[in-house]
Image 1 (cartoon, helix red, strand yellow):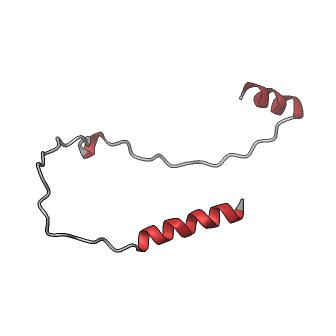
Image 2: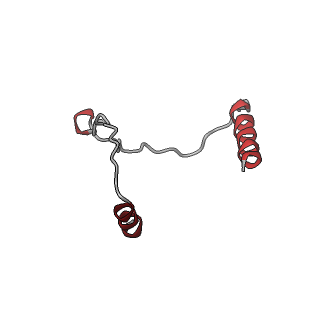
Image 3: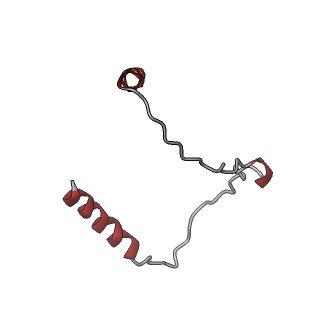
Length: 68
């Protein structure tokens, strides 16, 4: 699995380093796109996470594994 992810990383890295070639050609017909992002006051802010450690007996763990 490490080899596969390394190959994907190498492809991505090569893609990021590729230079953009601009041309002086006409772009054709264009159109304006309506702003689809919500206003800043409607964005959901990230809440602070709290890490919790609990001790469960084996039957409780088996129950939650079965229900998941």
